[in-house]
Amino acid sequence: MLNKKIPCQKLSRESLMELLTRTFFLLNCRIQHMRMTPAQIAVTLICGEKLPPFGEARIPVNATVAERIKLGRQYLREIAKADFGYDLVAWHAHLKESREGGYTWGRNVTLPNIMKMALDCPEWQSAVRDLRANESA
Image (tube, rainbow, N blue to C red; front, side):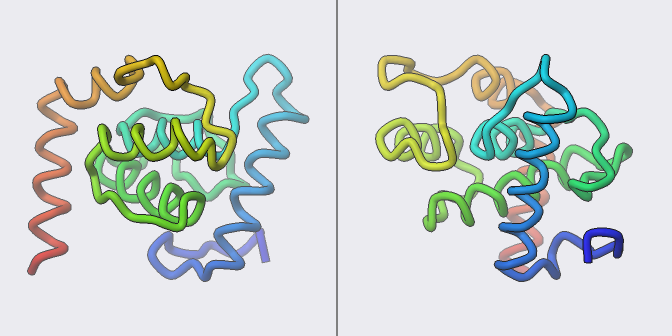
């Protein structure tokens, strides 16, 4: 199943969990110098940042900022069993208390730098505005 190309929006819950588990395994086993928890992967994506290209993770190398943000939100919803939309402050507030998905940013951190940079980035703001407009349409 992992060799098939599946659009992100059509992933079942089981497929998404398998994908997250496999991604976590790959990040920890194949690339020892870069270990990331599922929550770190999801936060990196919802902030519009690129991850190293892993074909098994189904994150296209040429994914747009909007595609990465949408996928990160999808991962976070699955991890946290909650949905805070594209509100990075709300995601951080929830995850720093619940520690779901191996969230590593501390409770004393107001907002991680990756989230601060995303909130200040015009490209991220524009992508989120477009994603919200498409959801309400």
